[in-house]
Image (cartoon, rainbow, N blue to C red):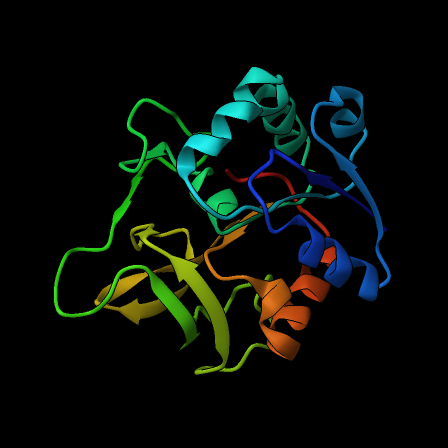
Length: 206
């Protein structure tokens, strides 16, 4: 299975590539090749850091190319900032829009006694019908590092709690995202990546 990984200079690329190759995927990387995206069988958008980094996706023409690929049922997985990019945007960078696949906006954790960012291992509450998280048991732990979070909606496939409950994973047919880092989450993370590699889309619902 060939996986096209998008490099928009937002970091965390090496560990994602290593995990996918460990699982037997044929991995290709692009930062601007629209033809590669047009021919993609699977797309992964990793990323850490500031939401403003996603501006590069617009500047290179990757945003409409990814949108077209999603519309033709190519399985897409966004990781961390890559998941947040699926939304309308983030209050971290109000002038930068997201893909708009989901209509809500990501926002910073509220101030309180707990430290922000949320860094470390946290447990998941998984939606029973999630295909991306199939086989992940209630309470399994994954690794997070983020200051901004997505709201819980009908497309939320898993939640976690830090300060408040937030969307840890989203899923709508071939469009998927995880706020945590599966490539740093041990066997649970590898299980999720295996599910993505094996995912067979139906008609796109998003």
